[in-house]
Amino acid sequence: MASIYKRGKTYTANVFVLKDGERRRKTKSGFKTKAEAQGWANEMEVAKQKHTLTFNSKTPFTKYFDDWVEIYKKPFVSYSTVQWYKLTSKHLHKAFGNIAIEDMTRTRFQKFLNQLGKKYAIETTKKLKMHVSQMVNSAIAEDVIIKDFTKGTNTTGLAGKDRNLKFLEANAMKQLVDRLVSRPVSERPVTDMMILSGLHTGCRYSEIAALEWDDINFTNHVISINKTWDNPRKIFKPTKTKTSNRMIDVPQTLITDLNEWHKLHPNTSFVFTGYNNFPPTNEAANKQLTRNLKEINSDKMITFHGLRHTHASWLLSQGVDVKYVSERLGHSSIEITLSVYTHLLQSQRNEQANKSVALLNNL
Image 1 (cartoon, helix red, strand yellow):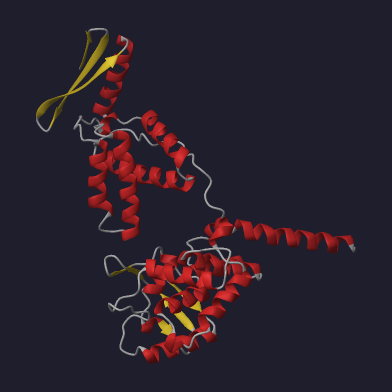
Image 2: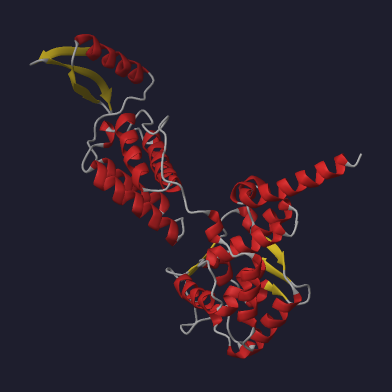
């Protein structure tokens, strides 16, 4: 049974239920009319019958999020992913303070997303919303809250960086390769060998860093990608997705260099080993890449991940089938490849359209 009474100018509703042998009360105040209070009480009575009624724990939304990350995410995701969750937590703490998770509403959350969208890229706001949505599903499963306050909310944001800034054009790519191989293998920094391998394979930094000698088939010119390297934790991790486990055919030139590199480092476990017997960090590889790009007077400064885009963009520009490129990159679906490289594929489509029209004109 529910009880409704007026307190000052607003109404309060109470719903009672036996929970764990105790008579518990769920209360909500501030209704402007008795009908609103009764409507809420009716909803709670329905939830009680469905055994989905939860009780106010008054756990701060931000604390629940942090605890959820600590228990359900931190032990199972990469260091870089944990940093993303920490960024989300920082924004949540700033926006919501000690607001209880039970008091979160779609309106509150939508206002939060709207504010984020004014300062950050749309990809960032989407990622933060995804983190909170994941947490909400957990809270619902644990009967902490009943409704998903992220459902139906929308993300906005600033336009991301032009994808053209993230990869090198063919001439700059060739200049970079020439720069890297201009030194004898015996005189090359380990980071140059990593950069050269990244250009030839399209692999992520974590995949290149994780390479061990057994992963290279010198006879068949194939490199096996079967794990990643979490440098901050100094541990191996699984690949990003199942399809990230793949065999990549590489040119003879790279195999020749890697073979010579192996002779110079016969007793290392990692293919690319730094001074501390571990692979150089992503930051170290990026610094060396920047130095190389400045040496060739490149008009674009890319990161190590930009080598991956450069590799794929060059293959696509040469007419290599997009499905093969997708498999080579280890994308979980061809749709990902299509969405990332739309700008290149569209230019190819235009060329094919012009070619087709020219052929038809000759009929």
